[in-house]
Amino acid sequence: MTMISKDVLEKDNSARESALRQDYDHLGEQLARRSIAIDEVKARVSAYGVAVPSWGVGTGGTRFARFPGAGEPRHIFDKLEDCGVIQQLTRATPAVSLHIPWDKDDPKALLAKAEELGLTFDAMNSNTFQDQDGQEKSYKFGSLSHTDAATRAQAVEHNLECIEIGKAIGSKALTIWIGDGSNFPGQANFTRQFERYLGAAKQIYAALPGDWRLFTEHKMYEPAFYSTVVQDWGTNYMIAQELGDQAYCLVDLGHHAPNVNIEMIVARLIQFGKLGGFHFNDSKYGDDDLDTGSIDPYRLFLVFNELVDAETRRAPGFNPAHMLDQSHNVTDPIESLMVSAMEVQRAYAQALLVDRKALEGFQESNDALMATGTLKTAFRTDVEPILAMARLEQGAAIDPVATYRASGYRAKVAGIRPAVSGAGGGIV
Image (cartoon, rainbow, N blue to C red; front, side):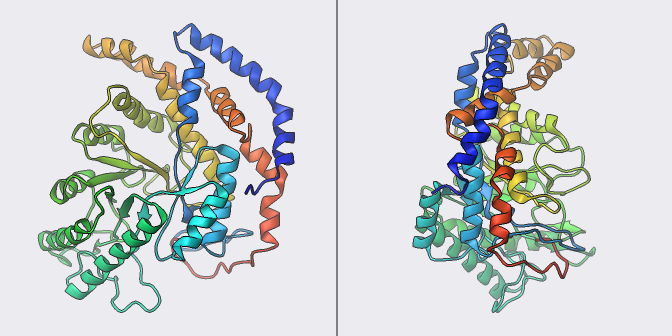
């Protein structure tokens, strides 16, 4: 099943194909002078994919307000259809990551819909950072680290349910992010709070299937503003070490203090075999959840420089999961996710262009200027013809946003899906 008419896709592509082929050939000549085979880079880009979050196709918001968009998904099946559009037009997002209980439904129906749309399921995401209807115990003062044993048990049981749902739909990982922490000095005993978290996390880990991975996610602040239980990559690494070989650290690009060297964190986690994967987004001031590459595309490239380095040298156990995690407050979420998926592919393609032999030589000789210049040469290369040709050859859109707008998809679903109220605040 395709959500966008084949006629619309082919019409838009036909108007752009001739110019694309000229640009691709020209770039190929340029790269050949650098001893780079453009077709090899294109093949690796074509094989790369980043998962989309089910919640990402809805309109986000801030702590103060949310302004709903037209045709917002009503349920998980609408979300999957929107994700199907993104995959159809980019061929860069083959998997969807579900969030429970937001996306809870019959596993057989979920599998059938995903198969119909050519999608698979990525990591499962549990939710113990907000209370749900009918929930017996509140997470206002924590979940896996709560002082009350019954509340911790409830949070553990929810994660075990996520594993069971994931097993039924073919997922192979569970991502845990908690909002636990404190808002005032003295509110919590840091040591006992962390001990309670580890105790609960070990119960979840014990239920993990042998072929699954557990991803724990650190976040410096929010919703707890004085202290957060899993506040940085060091704590996250300790958790992964404490839990066992199937536990890994998830790196969300926005979950760090301003100006933190995220690419070095990535390198450290790779070095010690605990890099589980990424939530890609961008930020200006804090955990802004802005579109990937919209603020600091060079940082994104530097992260991928470390990933390609590990890929090239075949780092032991290197198999990171990649997912977008953004809040789309003023844009069409489908458009933002398509652009972000392409930005991640762009950073990967640019990192593949780095002359690694030359870079290593400059590093060994302490030639700082030539080393950084080697990275800049790759970053400054316009790899758009590679990305667009990869899409064309896979039956996707040369210009996904233009094709999407020409299709009228948003207007069509807006006529089917009821308008959603924007009343009330809170991050969505």
